[in-house]
Each structure stands twice: as C-alpha cells, then as structure tokens.
Image 1 (cartoon, one colour):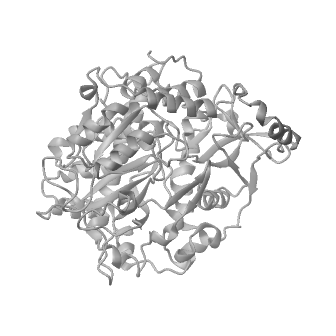
Image 2 (cartoon, rainbow, N blue to C red):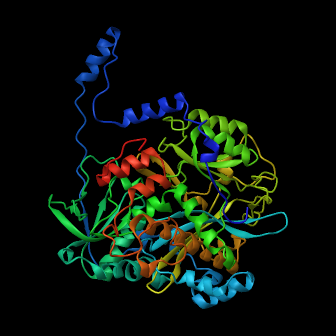
Image 3 (cartoon, rainbow, N blue to C red):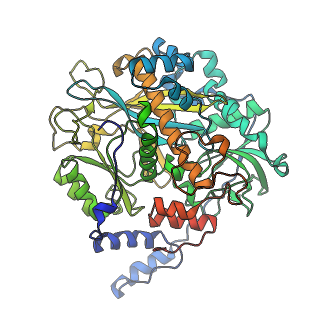
Length: 588
C-alpha cells in the first residue's frame, strides 16, 4: 500500500453497472422533497377532512429572520470565545514547541536523514513551492505500521477550511493576542490584497462562514486587529432563500448590513464548508481565502484529490519522495461498490466525495455493513449520507493487524494511542494545519482526535465499525446545525501528547505529507484555472494541452470542460453550472 494506487472505475463499469432503480428512485424522491419549485399534489382522504380543517386553522409559520453582517471591531479579542476550555489552561508540550521552532533547513535535513532515498534538494523545492490558489490547508493523517514494523504517516484527506486554532495550546500572551489567528491573517491573507483591483480599494473586509463560529469569529477579530479597521462577520448557508451575501456579474462580493444596505467587499476569509460551489463562483474579483477552485480540485472533493495525489507521486517517483495514501478506486458508480470492496478483501471505506466532518464516510468490515449501505444510502433518517453525488471513492481500510484491507503489499494498521490503564488502545489521527507565509510552507497548528470505542484485536460485530475507526468530533444535528464531542479531543499539551505515542519525527513526517498533499491539489487548481509559468512547480503538466501562457485569453478562467472529464458526476456539475452560468446538460 506504500504510496497511492489510483484505479479508475471505468474498468469496473465496463458498461455493466448503473444505479439501481430503487436507488435512483430514493435519490429522486429526496431531490423532489428538497425542491421548492412547486407544491406536491394533495393526497388527503375524505376521512382526513377534520384533521385537515384543524391543521388549516393553525396560523402559518413566521418568515425566517433575515440574516445580516455583524460588525467586529479591533482590540476586542477574547480568548475564551475562540479556544476550547481545555486549551486555555494547557501548557504546550516541549517536543511540540521544538517542532514549531524548527527551520525549513533542519526539517529537510532530518527528513532526508531518516529517508536516505529522498532527494533533499527536491524536498526543499517542494517546501518552498509558492501556491497559485491553495494558501492555507490542513491534512488528517493516521500513524500506521505493518507487522514488519514499516511505520509511516498516511494522508486520509486534505481540507481547505481546516479547524485547528481553537485546539492549539500556546503561552498565555499568545493566547491573549490570538497568535495563531493573527499569524494566518498577517502572513497569508493580507499579502493577497497587494494586487487588489482599484475599484475595490474602498471595499470592506469580511469573514463568511457556515460552520465553526468559534474559529471564524477568531479570524474576524484577528483581521480587525491586523488591519486596524472594522470587519464584518456574516453567515452564508446553502439553504438560505435570501442570503446576506451576493456576487455581481464581475465576481464582486457584497454583504448586507443590519440596515439592509449592501456593502462591497474587497477581501473575504472563507469558512464556508457545505457544498460551497453552489453559491460562490469560481472566479471573483473579491479576494477570497481560499477560493472555491481549491475545494473542487481536491480540498472538498475526495475523488479529484486522489487523482491529484497519484499524479504528484508519478512526477516524484525518481526523487524518493512519496505521498502516502490508502489504495483508492475513483469514479466508482454505486453498483460497482461491492466489486471494489471485494477487491480489497471485503474490508474497505466508502466515501461520497463531497462530504466533510465525517459525513458521507462509511467503514465496511462485514457483509452486513455493506448490505446496510447498499440498501439505505441517501435515505432520509437512516444516517446513511445525504445522497449527493452519483460517483464514489472506495479506499483500503486501516484497522488492526488482523482486520485491515488486503492491498497485496501487506496490511497497514493503526499504531493507535498508548494503552490506557485498562489496556485499551484507541485510533487517533493527527490534524496538521499549514500556511504559505510568503517564502515557504510552515506549520501553524496541530491537534489529535481519538475514536469513540477502543481498537479491538478482533472485530466485535455488535459494535459499529465507525465507532472504532472514526475520529471526527463534529456531530451533525440537522441542516447547518453542528455539535462537537470535545471529550475525544487530544491537544498538544503535557498531558495529552504523551498519550498519543508519537514523537518529533512523526510531526516532521506529518508536515511533509501535508505539504505534498497541498501542493498536489494546488497543481490541479492550475490545470482548471490556467497556469502561470512563474508558478508551474512540480507536476504542472497534469493535463496535456494546458496553455501555460498568461497571454492566453482564457488564463484564469475555469475550464469546465476539463473538469467534467476528470470528475464526471452530475450533482456537482449541475451546482457549478448553475452558480456560474455555464451550459450543462447531463450526458454532455
């Protein structure tokens, strides 16, 4: 399983697989329910007349409250509002502090020393490769090993709106000034405004979000402090019929203030996570961190992320560098999923590519779990995903030594936490947040999360496998409503770090893997948005025929046709087309 092995589902399909009638009907029914284009026909019976009369007597619900942007002023950062309680009194572990103070040169020296087949000069080049679009990201990684002791960090996914600040212990003075928040705004966000269009010089600054208000508001306060001006915070949900954010035909964002006045925005920090491509255009004059192209190119599209990872590994093959990922089947139609799972020994992970926060991820360790998924995916109230997207990815599952996916090169399994006093070992991940600081990639925050149930030596069929393997803390309570299970949060302090069983070299490895994953996705962004010859970097020739000249009239324009070829999935294509005014018909 070393590295990436992408397997196109075209070979799996061979024209034989299609979504079942039952599955299509379930999806169509769900879409019809969500549609507000026309009311459903009445099915009331005569015997229900009395009940109908009573229901009609009930006054109609009040119209939803109109949302508007809220002003944030400078010098009002309150640590208790932007950090978890367990972080406020935590002391950062000395080894973690040492990691954050390592220079890029020392990181490269250490990594190449432990990986003597790696070309150190290429590693330094990667760590200094300027991004074209993706300037801030976070990767979720598992520490894995084999029965022969082949230990490595494996990238599970990359995120374009990563959390991390609220979970990062720092000194009292740094907490009080919002150090991590300010570092990102000062070093990554602010430089984006250097080439701002003149017509937006007088525009406002904003933070738009649909999740994680704790960190989104932290960035708003940091922005107000760094720029010494008022900043607007505004919620932007995918189900808002009259949202407080809009874009004009030129891609200029405007926000509605409390007086109903629309204000132009010169730059915005985005923490919009749920299908953001259905309401934010691909190309905007308003500067946005991160732009939507980063989401569809892999940051919130696991299908294209896998392809980007595989392509980068191909380009780096002779350098010794390798991005470690599970074995992945891409573009898998619904009916081909059992075939893909069987190819992994009957154990695997099914992912609908566009979900996040643990949504639309299904661990399969038995025929019963696979049957349950195949019968209930997308059905409302069954806890089996949203039903968004017609193509899936299927990946090898990392479990325990006796029950991980068989990928032909050995079984990788979780190193897990240090055993508790009861002898329990838990699955734990590492979230590594990185930013581009103008000269290099640098780590900014790191934390861990553990699973709900301990990792057994043998599978217990009475315990859902996701409770054993899933580490995400987010709990979906409803549409655009989230909770957090902070009991499983493990921060990098003197107490929790020692439970993780990781060391400095694991943190270095995690950082390198995160940069590789980020560079891979950014390279794919260049394919879809045109390529600047000054920023081509590694792997720029992902797609043949890309015009690398800035004189190209289409430079900077989204290449929808190429995207359709690399990601042939109707749901996301329809959303992108609708938001950007592209012509699209299923089957094009």
